[in-house]
Image 1 (cartoon, rainbow, N blue to C red):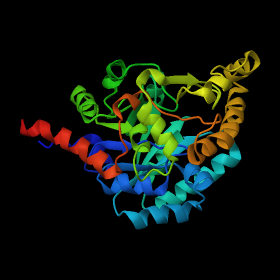
Image 2 (cartoon, rainbow, N blue to C red):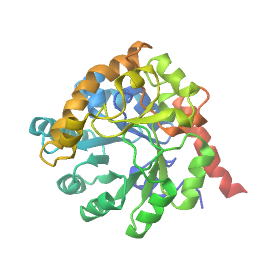
Image 3 (cartoon, helix red, strand yellow):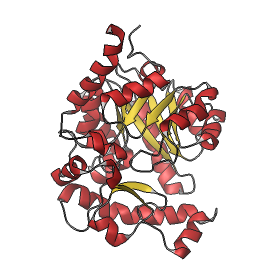
Length: 330
């Protein structure tokens, strides 16, 4: 049996069970295409493609398709409370389906309506979860798989270890992908040996030649160790993993008393999260693409400890493929 064949590779039509996690602002078209072209799965992050990299969505998707003929996926953030945003996302989904995308990763809201729509078009839906509660809701919505975001992840991290999260969700019978703490091939192998159908990496792919973030961002990842990662509520209103530096220390990591109350209230939490996200959209792209100063905020996970150089995306994917294949020849 080829150890690279898992339910994820079957569902996504890929040869290596690795997903390049969708990242704002880091998912530029060249990175997405390079990961897919190497045999893993590049994920389109629509807000990054349009707001940061300046593409009309269809034009951006066609540009990616001009760089690779391998499958790519699309990230769908479900913010039903914001109708203008959801209308735009609905149009992007239509365009993606028209352009042949068939693997989708949903996050945040309930994926029920989206799942049916994509299934009707012959597509596959995996959903981001951080615990059993959200996994059960996703399973009820008949998603095809789960991306399990653990406490080691960058961006919006969970608070459960990858081992405990797998134990909590294994009984659902869905393929699960480990997201968080993976930068070395042997770490991916351990997670697949545990029972995960694949791994999702973000931080490792930021430190690649195809990722167009500023070199200072990549150097910050190379220089950081796991203990340099802290959680801040000041980017989106919920904890986000970033590299601790002067900018983070100046801004602080905790929302104020009033903001915290509004973030917890069911009628105001989405508006507060949007407020924080709008502020961070003005700040983070500048930090990511224009170099170092006190305003820099670098999202990254605890996997920074395993990253010591910038590689090509193809080299990263090949290293993981070599490790996962090695098991069958021992």
